[in-house]
Length: 550
Image (cartoon, rainbow, N blue to C red; front, side):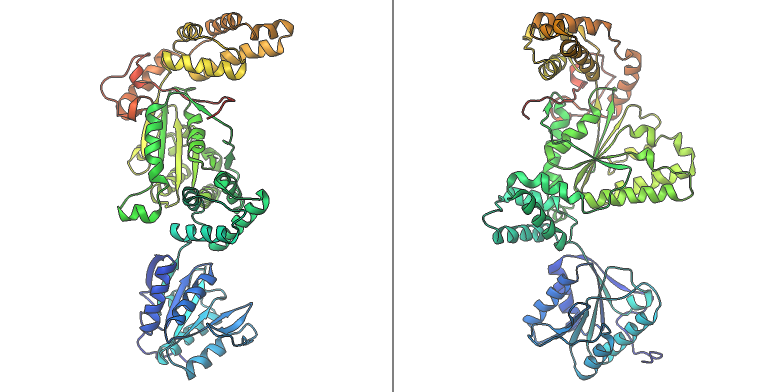
């Protein structure tokens, strides 16, 4: 068909009309509006063609509009009618043009299309068909997951159909449970939590994931969320610098009262639906930067967040994205960020971010571009990723990282207080030795290890435990004697070398000015001069794994 002198179109090729990303209900409303207003071309960008066909069938079912649909598998069918399909030998456009010439106010859905992003014979035929639709008062609806040739996109309306919303995912889960009432028993809270975990997946992916989990486990109930989340990660191709971390073991958390109180408040915000947050113009928390004394539990806090929030944990080795070939570093960085967005919601752990993004490494153009990619993702990504980044020295870190909106909060993790050392020693001794030490013995040992970090205390206890369990008959007898255990622990602590107090003082000076204390009630901001070594108001204790219950 000759399109040399077209009539005025709904939009010129230079100004394509694009609607924002919409859910299924909004898509249905817009399609009906465009069809009734005789818009000649509607392009729906999605990989879920069945949802577009369902929306069109719903419109036809409650109106006097006619609609046809084409797919490679079924060929041409008339919606909401039982007529046999028309075999067009996978070339529907002649049938579309014939239909438009003899009917009015008819919509034709092309659910399977060819390459749409270039000027080809196929896209030019679509342009001609769109002109015909305008002349005959019909509507051509094209479904594609790819970019669209600019001239074609400018001839009508472009709608981006997003993945199912929170309410739609809840409905899918509820419908799946109703079809398997004996094997699927999920309460309202678990349904909502699972809906958040499945954010970003298509309808087909959600259904397949629920089916696979049901077959693998035999049932789905409130305890199955973690296993469903683990299977979600397998839907996406992994990348070498983002690694899953197992945090399924029971954990006992000592100290960190301020951080834990803050996390509990933010947890409710993080798991709120996108619609709830948008109603109040809010955003989910982005994450936290933990800065402080080495060996005091900053890295272990990432496991604590993932365990308590029941989210998968991934460790991002930011330094490993660098490559010697031009452009390869930026490509690997983008691959990693795309993978993280796909497996969300999750907790992302970046250990020692100060080494990977220091200003000294920023002298390189490649490092600057990587930093720019990371900052843009941190600011603009709408995936529910809670970032836990740890740092021992923030003096060399770029100041852009500390802008509000990138990290939700910065916490300072200090050496443990006497009471926290008391609890930590008791937890480690119970875990490694099984020896019951009374409060007096624990208090004496806590005094003995003043100025120790948690890793220092842990190593002392484990050194004694190794001697007890692998030191022959004499060592095995020590483990059963609390007095002997205390004596050996005290000796190990006297021989250990704690962290240099001068180095700790410099770290504390920064933390007092720029961060909240990770311990203390409510995590109130610090103020005034740097705290002394034993200041209980500004110190924190790490999470300590034991074999006991949570």
